[in-house]
Structures are given as structure tokens and as C-alpha cells.
Image (tube, rainbow, N blue to C red; front, side, top):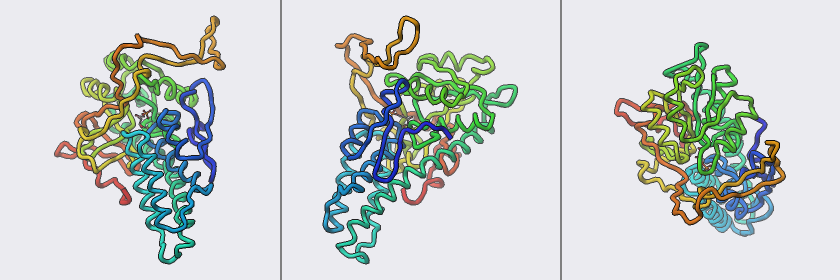
Length: 388
Ligand code: MRU
């Protein structure tokens, strides 16, 4: 398992790695309140669907642990928790993991046997139940990802359209879906990790992932950290890569994560995912979505109903990084923000796009791999845990 940790937690203390400072600086922010968690998520110091949900859930747990809930009676304790969770839900709209975690946490506090405890004891029992459930979400995420890694690597090895002479596969991934986007191991990057650790990965390619550069800043960092054979490309190079049939760059699959997979299989993920899916189909390359069941939203019928977050123009017109000296060395003590476009140009900056189910070959969950049935659509009911 990777030593990289986006989230460090012990009861009453939550620390979150500031991903805006990566790959140059390793700095953890202490998060003690829902407001601090909201800001950390909104400003993308933590990002990635599972990590967002975990930070929100744990941050409110820390707040409760330190006496944040002063409600004298159980109904007030539940309304207080509800209001804090509803506030946290507004931080980022597209990833469904946060909504699913909140629905689960609200159900947990309502399941406390208030009648048996009585009004005086029930509020603290409600707080204890909340904290235990938030910790469970954090703990289970890594187990989930390890299972996704196993299922996904097995499916790809059985279905790869092309392999190296040694029987290994090369893959491309987009955005960041690794330890930094989860509690550990990762989803799409987890499959790549699992392929690598079993000796089945020939080569991994990662896109830069404009405009926020999660690929170059985070995925490239994780791949180098883990010594996984990997190459960085810009997003616009994917077509050229797929057309290359050289050993090593002959791609068997594009593997991506998900922010929301809806009932028919349409999938919202980092902007650029849809273009990769179209290219993959044209080139006969498998297109795999790695999604824990917490990223599946059976309430939404098709991708047309997914709310896509739009972010500020400066993410396209400016960029930040560490200074490179005349000797070519990176000076991590000096960071700068520079303009890369005319600052008055109009900008459209959707953070995500929707890939139609038709372009997706497999959705890998911790419960197994879901492929399209004879009707040509996905049916996730068999993999969904009852609580969702
Ligand atoms: O805007 P981000 O960085 O939060 O977007 C992240 C993605 O799109 C990931 O691919 C997705 O959340 C899956 S993370 C396991």
C-alpha cells in the first residue's frame, strides 16, 4: 500500500494534505470545523469524489467530538447534525459520494434508540453514533479500492484487445484517482497499482488534465512515488498516442474514475473524459470506469440530469508553479502565479463532462464488474449495497 495519504485522522483530529501545493510541498492543514472543511473542498485543497465525502464526514465528526453539538434533546441534536451536513453538501455539486455519505450519516443518527436512552442520554449517543459511522466511511474506502483494483485488473487482463509479448497491458488514465483522491490505493489508479504489483502492467500513461492539472500535479507524482513505469502526455496528445501501435504505447484500455454514475451508466467525470471515450471507441480500446458503489446514483436516470460544476475563469487564464532556476533545478521555496492568456478573454470552465453509457465497456465496483446487458444498458442493482 502507498505511503501517500491525503487524509490523516485520529479521533478528534483531522489533517488534510493541501493538494494545491503538490507536487512541490507536502503540507497538511488541520480541519476542525465544517466551515474549514467546506473551504478546503471548495478551493480544491482536497479533491476527488471519495476524498471529498470523507473529509466532510470526518470534519463534522471532529466538530461534534469537541462539543460542537450543544442540543439538550435528541430531536435538536439530529436537526443540528442535519443542518451542518446540508451546509457541507453545498461545497461541490457534481460528485455524488458526498450526498450518499450524508444520506447514510443522517440515517445512522436516526437509528439511535432514543426511547430506550431517554432525552438526557440520547444526544451524546447520537454524537457517538455519528462519529463511529464517519470513521467507518473512511476505513472502508481503502478496502473498497483494493477490491476495485482486483476486479478491474482481472477483467482487463481477460478482455484486453492488445497485450505486450509478455502478456502485460498498457493503459491510459485521466485526472487523479489515486491515494490522493481517496483514503488510499485509489480507484482507476488503484487498478493500475494492482496491475503493476502483480507484474501485469507494461506501461501507464497519464494525461496532464487541463485546466487544473490533476494528472501532471498529482497522478504523475503518485506514479513516480510508486516507481510505476509511466509517461505524462498533454490531453491533446491522446489521439496521437492511441494511433501509435509501438510495443509499450499500444494502449489496451483507458481507465478513469467517476464523480457520478447514473442509473443508465452515463458517467460524469473530469472534463476531457468524454473525448477520451470517443477516441478509445474509434481505436478499439476498452473504456473502463472505476467507481465505488458510493459514486453510483440510482436516483438520476440519465447524464442529462447531472449538475455540472462550472469553475472560475482564472483556472484557464493563469497557472501557478515553483520557480525553475537557470540551472534547471526546481526551487520549491519560490512559487509564482503567472498569466497564460489575455485576462479579458471570455472563458467556459466546466469541471466535468458526461460520457454516455454507450461508450463505456465496463464499470468496476468493489462488488464486481458491471457490463452492458443484451439490451445495451447497465443494470447496477446487483452490486448496490442495501443502505444506498
Ligand atoms: O475536480 P476534481 O479533481 O475533484 O475531479 C476529480 C475527478 O474527476 C476524479 O476522476 C473523480 O472524482 C474520481 S476520484 C477517485
